[in-house]
Amino acid sequence: MAMSKGSKNGTITIVTSPVTEHEKAISIDAPIVLRDIIELDRLQKIMDDFFELTNMGISIMDMNGELLVQSGWHNICTQFHRKNPESLKNCIYSEIHPTRSLKVGETVGYKCRNHMWHVVTPIIIEGHHLGNVFLGQFFYDDEDLDINVFADQADKFGFEKEEYLETLESVPRYSRNKVETSIRFCVNLTTLISMLSLGKLNLLRENAERRRIEEAYRRTNEKLNLLSNITRHDINNQLLVLRGNLELAQKGTTEPGMLSRMAKIEKATDNIWAQIRFTKDYQELGSTASRWQRVGDLVAERGRALDIKEINLCEQVLRLELFADPMLGKVFYNLMENSAKYGGKAITARFCCHDDKEDLLLIYEDDGNGISAADREHLFKRGFGKGTGLGLFLSKEILGITGITIQETGEYGKGARFEMRVPKGMFRFAQGDPGRDPREKTG
Image 1 (cartoon, rainbow, N blue to C red):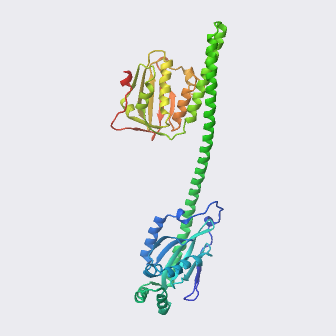
Image 2 (spheres, rainbow, N blue to C red; image 1 turned 120 degrees about the vertical axis):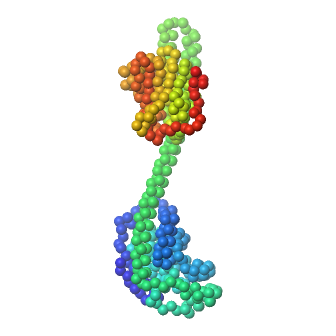
């Protein structure tokens, strides 16, 4: 660090290290506010410790003169210079104007308009001079102090002269070596502030960009959902017309061939209707934030409308909660509905769970016909199955939102068995109230 000394009452300029790589200018698209990108609380602690070690006042101000952090300001400033409106103008002028032309790597020492020494080094981020670190309110120990200057100043601003001059005597005096050492600290501090602030600034920009993208997605989804809702509504209206006319046509003929063709049309219409309902369910998938849901309550609610002889839940399942998409109840409904429709007899269903290393296995099984090995391979593919072929496909997608997987592991002829593997962090067991037991309805 090279230091150029002027007169004892003039200005000194200290030229420090060259511009570092992180300080090279990068174009930005919005104003940067220093307060928003520095850690004020941490810097306050650093400056408090600095003052305790050196007895030298230190502060950070932005280029609008706003004081962001300060420690150890002397009474001559806080009790006199900054309290009087006219002398305060001197303070503000001295804190802003002499610093505007500073560049990275420069430090300037000067006497303010109230005749106190200050040293300042700039905080420059992405080529923008956002503020300064000040050391201030001191005299050098080798300079002659002209008391008359301060006596005249007391008269000019209406200070109580005796008290003012007594306070002046307590203003600290430092050696030039001590000031140089403190300057090196400030240069390193501003470099650190610039580096950390640049990282925070980039993070803020990334977050802002993410919010812009999310907002764009949200608006796009709103438009797509509106279009989908209108389209579904229009198709459903046309299907109502089609089914109404088909029913009239069926009543108007007894010819077997015609009735057979009409039955195929009716089945196709039902399939279209199911597809339309599926698009609504799939549209809603993932649109609402996942949340904790109690399995026993969902099973009790969804199983109420199904023709199942008995639904049993082990004690652990009654207390089990899963973190999943709000459509989780539809998964359990689809499993139980398939048992009721295709089990082949009066069905008993059962939910149980147990640990598997760090995961949890939630198992659903029934005592129906089961699923063949040939069907098992395609079971969760869209369009496969005896009905619409959409229920198990949708169930897999719902569970997958929070990393839950599902597979069928039953033995054909002995019943279906579905294993849902729930990863760590996506399950918990509620304390106290065991929840609703579906056996109260069906037992």
